[in-house]
Amino acid sequence: MYFSIIIPVYNRPDEINELLESLVISDYYKKFEVVIIEDGSTIICKEEVDKFKSKLNISYYFKQNSGPGDSRNYGMKLAKGDYFIIFDSDCIIPKQYLSEVETELNRNYVDCYGGSDAALESFSDIQKAINFAMTSFLTTGGIRGSSEKINKFQPRSFNMGISKKAFETSHGFGNIHPGEDPDLTIRLWKLGYETRLFKDAFVYHKRRIDWDKFSTQVTKFGKARPILNSWYPEYSKLTFFFPTFFILGFCISSFLFLFGIQFPIFFYGVYYLMLFFLACIQNKSLKIGFLSLIAVNTQFFGYGRGFLKSYLKIIVLKQKPQEAFPELFFKAKS
Image 1 (cartoon, rainbow, N blue to C red):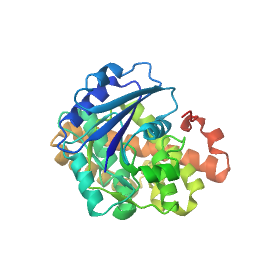
Image 2: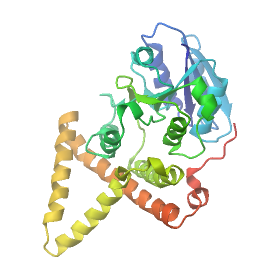
Image 3: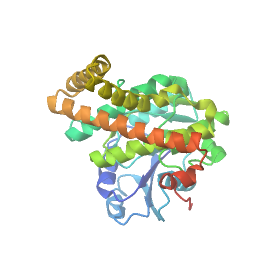
Image 4: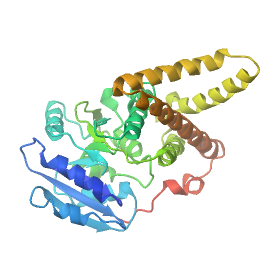
């Protein structure tokens, strides 16, 4: 089996340097290739990539901007491997990653897998707080994880693999973003392919975003979900509604509190205390505990608002997704 690592990049040369450095020290003893796709960046990373040509089997391609999904497709069409591994440019790869993937594929082969993410000690406090919000079992990360079976896992494109056969059959990612990864996964299921979570094939996901960008990101996640539900209603789940119920419940509880009815808001206080203590324990930091409350609040309110707005437009009013939310769709050019 020959791995091709596919990495789309947009204006992040510093991240590519860290990612490639982590691949250099991989303990995987077989040959693999790295394919970098510059997605119309104005700050290109070719100079950084060139530094690794003597250390890695690496190729670099520049194309017009058409989004991460189309860029991944572009890279997979050019790749020489029979199994593609896809990373976001803000990931750092543990040295045992490729070995873990090969072990899992040899043990129980699937044509598409997904892995989880973690935070390095060197990450900033905000990055660690956002990582907690995105991965904790008490947040939407936990809600998503508990609603998905290990053997029917929806891989996320920051850390996933897909066989050449499955890519060619499915034609890869669509032009929605975010949401291109569950869209691809569901199409693969409908084509008869299986997916699976590889628990030990994790990456360090260095999300380089501030609070405003994080809010924008999770709001887009919320907007994308009702679109996916309209395309694939058989895969819609009640858990997808939870963040919206959460913020509506919070608003109602706050209103009732003004009239002396304190019981509903009490449950929210208990929940936030649980979040705070768990984040403090996991990160061994009171500061990250407080920042995690901001991160989770941003996550729930951003996703919940986005989901509600999209649900009303797409499900209730039956608007076309591309017209209702043009910012979620790239025009494919590959």
